[in-house]
Image 1 (cartoon, rainbow over the protein chains, first blue to last red):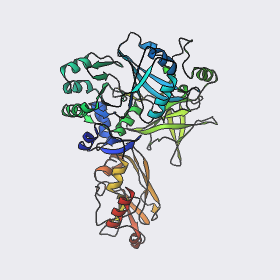
Image 2 (cartoon, helix red, strand yellow; image 1 turned 180 degrees about the vertical axis):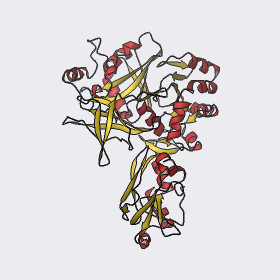
Image 3 (cartoon, rainbow over the protein chains, first blue to last red; image 1 turned 135 degrees about the horizontal axis):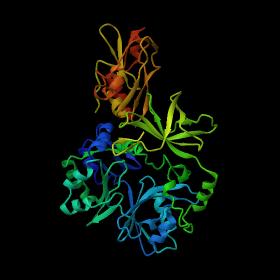
Amino acid sequence: MGLKTPLYSSHIDAGGKMVDFGGWDMPINYGSQIEEHHQVRQGAGMFDVSHMTVVDVTGSDARAYLRKLLANDVAKLDDKPGKALYSGMLNQAGGVIDDLIVYNRAQGYRVVVNCATRDKDLEWMNQQAAGFDAVVREQPELAMIAVQGPQALDKCKQALTPAQATAVEGLKVFTGTPVEDWFIGRTGYTGEDGVEIMLPGDQAPALWQALLDAGVSPCGLGARDTLRLEAGMNLYGHEMDESVLPLAANMGWTIAWEPAEREFIGRPALEQARETGTEKLVGLVLKERGVLRAGQTVIIPGSEQTGIITSGTFSPTLGYSIAMARVPAAADTQALVEVRKKQLPVSIVKPNFVRHGQSLV
Amino acid sequence: MSEIRSELKYLPSHEWARVEEDGTVTIGITDHAQDSLGDVVYVETPEVGATVSAGEEAGVVESVKAASDIYSPISGEVIAVNEALEDEPEQVNSSPFDDGWFFKVKPTDLAELEDALDADGYKAAIEAED
């Protein structure tokens, strides 16, 4: 018996096929994962992401603490209420303990981390808070619903109170705002426009129902994975973990090297790796029949070293298989992948396949 | 609960076999199998004229989620494959026992199917799996 989000009954009512995900009973789909995927690319879909861990950081040293804790620099959020920042949280060796989003709120910072990494994240965050006037507090009573797709904002507004709808109206991309005890962010994990709404768990089923009534389709973790992969977004435990540097996970842009005197955790290791070079994360495209899967070996012509597929799937939007792979720096535009005893030719592209419904390949 | 048809024979690996009136055998995957796999995106069947052996690999079905080998419940020569699955693999999900069939075999020995499970045996097998 796994943990249940406040929306568990809503999933059962909607015909959700429940699976274990990081200890939580979550819907993998409500019938067809591909249909749900298309709903998000063409209309509006919603995901229960209440299993994710919300942590509020407060105290007079909250800013200084996060500037040490995170590879990206929360100073970028200064004087930008509601602004969000994506960052890795690294260990001393530069490996990724987790990736997260931090929002700048009036009361402090709100950090959203992954569910599978919750325990070690909280332990690390508390440990590193020593010596700072910073309080790290999980907010387990919050539910979170992501509404995503080209029609997400319009349909969402129909399901909200006038005050909430006005707040959504004024939200800039990658920014959040409080509305009474809710927090609404114009963020997501699909490559489409949309919002993520954090709200007290006891209010979540009513919002879910209102969104259903507004014509938003419930979508499971299956579609969430194919959507994020098409959008070239990393999944912790696949594209990166504690043994992978952000430089080898297409997260170089999330490392704030300036100001040079900011001593964030992992910085010396990253500076050294930047000199010596690392592997790189790329996208792969397989146009012939077959599906690329995580764990398959990537052979680079002319190189003794091989790479590995970190995530692979059939892309419902493109109609063929795509993948992300960590490969030697020498990899160019072509490679071979060992798929079921055969070596299939793939093209190497930027790890970014679909954005706002359009192919980037 | 997934559908199980009483007139079919089954393998524990979730293939079904149907003996047609002309003595040929049609093969596909079960409703339980398609439900576990999720949306099917590719089906690789053996070629017409190829020989398949009972209990041996005869193809692959790939869903968004996973790839799975197909085993033939019977030995013989492949006399037809379901070409419609090339463009509409989703028929495996919507109609696993009818439109979503995989291939047809002219069996060398129909008695081989006596080793396969009947509907009750297959039902017990998938209940034991869950």
